[in-house]
Amino acid sequence: MHRAFVALIEGGASNLAMVDVYMGGTTGRALRDTIFKPILRDHPGITFKTYWIRETMGLGTEESGGTTLQPNTAKFKDTQPNADRVTTAEIHVRLALGDDMTVVLDGDHRAPIVIFDRRGRIVRKLTPRGGQTTRQLLVELLTS
Image 1 (tube, rainbow, N blue to C red):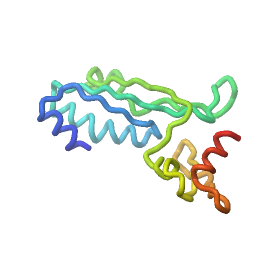
Image 2: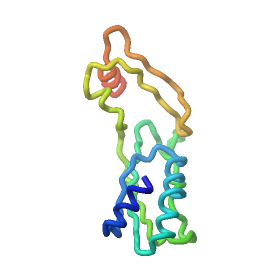
Image 3: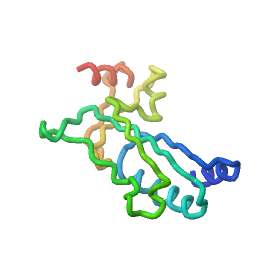
Image 4: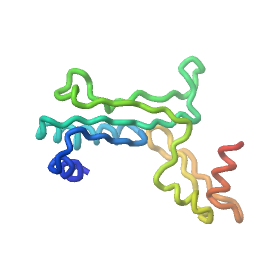
């Protein structure tokens, strides 16, 4: 990914935007530390705008005592070098579907659905029953 951003810069880009579904702090911190920091250090005229899409399904509020959306720990802190050149917007959505959605969209797959906790640990694996497809299982989960 670093090379792709550098190629854009070498092609004349100076304001780069990125959209990502925020799955956890590890990915965000890796992006910040291995992509943003080196590019900002080596290319003084570059700015980044990041849009973090964050799923809220199944999350409560602090007042409700439920599991809550964790803060984005990958953001630059105001005191960090070049923090003024990276801005972040968080967009909260009810449900975020991953890049493996072809399994659901194609309609004939029978792959399991794996549910992770906020630390990325598998907490449940749901396998379609009998002739049920992954799509049918997902619709059942979303409507029950």
